[in-house]
Length: 141
Image 1 (tube, rainbow, N blue to C red):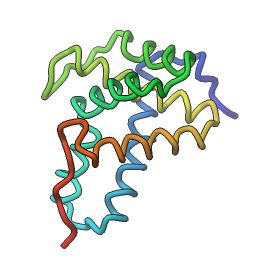
Image 2: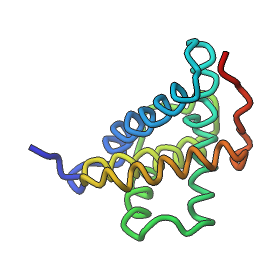
Image 3: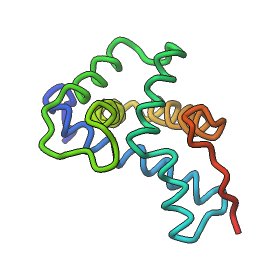
């Protein structure tokens, strides 16, 4: 039985989307040859931190990358009432990153795996080009 993304709130979509996006990032880092846990964690932060995700949303907006429906699900996540607090960032950035994750959760539940892969690949390239201010300098050893 498939869950209908229209029936879920933004926090639930973000819960799934966080995991969906994280898998793409972990696979990418392993493919780059990173294997040490400390290396992996440090490198992953450039892709999955709230600040990086907020920068990715800005980049997506500038590139007119998302559909109207995708923006709607992003906004559902961004505007959702959250009972958790941002640990290393301000509330606005945290909410934008929640919207980013909700977008990925929506796409996964909608069965749009090709679009998930397309956006994840775009995000990886965007970060590695240094456009989020978190460019990758870690090399495999």
